[in-house]
Image 1 (cartoon, helix red, strand yellow):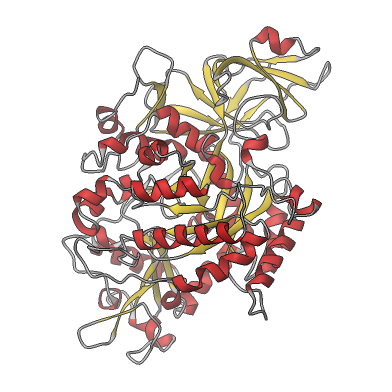
Image 2: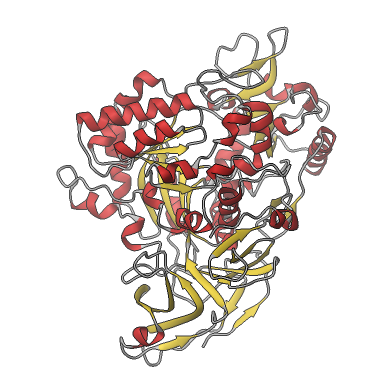
Length: 627
């Protein structure tokens, strides 16, 4: 039996806690025992033991049933723990890794890759002091100062951040403050002048002062991209092996064994795929990476059919660790940035800067070549107008070319109504719900952006469940931190930092939240498209559904473990999945979360707490238990 050793330091390696190797003298079959094993398999939701052979689940059941398969070794290191399937992050970005390499200036405290914490910024004075500190530490550099995580919506006692504020730091060196949503940035006068962003610039999204001059706020990517020197710093980091390694470490720290990147650039920058393969395909990299490539025309092309064919070519290079799984469309902006497309009555307060990122009249023409080739499509939809537009588009696509299991998905799904969910269910669509918004911006949505009534039905996982829509939950890291237990806690409790319960009737059970993060609701990932009339053998083999061989504990499924202590204290060592090389190593981080019986004396999994601004005790006081 293996013995856990080591300490929880996460610098420069994926598995800070090591386990002595078990010799394979008698068999390549190993039986893991635990206090309880949650399988997510409805035919036997809980078992005592799991037998593993060749990296796959051989058997799950009683110890005797597992042992009946023949010679084996027993590993009892998790005898006092609860095992659950490895966690799947259904919407994140490799930008999460790059984000860890630039200074953080967000409102909430943020975990660092090395296990430490970056403190939040709570006043403009703190922000400007931090920028001055960075300027002093990098004096003489020609590079702009680039920081991330800021959002002006939290600073209700301040006017909105402009170039005038940033000019107090420097009028000579360009400054680029990337907002947490990744939909806005604020720059100083030096950056505006460097790239000739003036009152005569016609690009949408350049915010202006009362005199018509750019005030430094750049809304959405067409305007943000004008600040090329700031954007280029982030783009270079996206293709930096250090950033990809950092993403892997964050996955290891938080128990993520598979992450779907919804900002991949294989269509626009295909040459960068090689770096990803070099890092991710290594056996020791601790997670699988699924890619949804942003819609873009290949270099030199003006035909969306060429883009769809290029997507299939990307699939030809798929490996077990790095796969292309579909297309990502971005239809609008962010609600907290006032750039999402909102239907009547619009925003509760503030100025509507809503932008269509894709003209709605072009949606069908863009999506059609991908749909016809059996390529699954996910569409970023924050405002309710974009949700309607995407549902209408999918309806037209399936009328033109029926496809019974397309799983085209509404991403974020923040203001989806019951009527929209019903339409989605009838069309076979899926939902990927941004539950973390309830914590990070719930109070702001209630008080500022959409008002009390609409805020109560945001991230409506319970309605999706009632209407029969397959859904998953996500963090959208780097927008909010990667970490499944917090996302589950948000969906189960719907508590904001002020202590407000935001929509008690949209709470879901802890079991449903676990299903949405581990397997049951992950149909939205759609790794395989069943279109044998359109797809050859290459295309059939290149896309595999997570519910085909991953995500729960039953015969034939890949080994993806996520050990939890059965009745832990609030601050407990959290052991995350195994290495891809089959080595008995676990990742380990001390986090302020708890997973244990929700009713205090039963065996149901409950989720509560989070380290950071969400105080563990306060969160526990607000815990809502489900029978």
